[in-house]
Image 1 (spheres, rainbow, N blue to C red):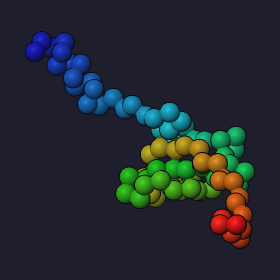
Image 2: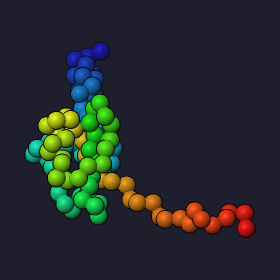
Image 3: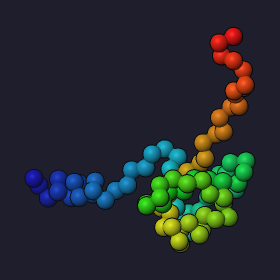
Image 4: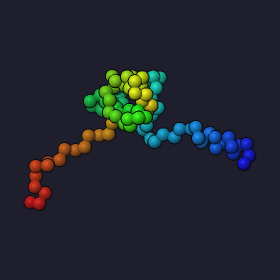
Length: 89
């Protein structure tokens, strides 16, 4: 391999490719109220706990204490269904 190919392969090892709507979470890149669901929550990712829904006021705590590294939007609330109805009628 040439040195150019080696450099390109090394770059692939360190570059982050994030899914759509997943953002790096740092103190310089905090979500705002516009990003929250109607309850004031977003989802944050912590390496050892996975994804969690947290209130916007707790995001900085998750960065410092739980080492949260990514954030995204909460999924929409599923529609309410009528579980009392008999599906066989």
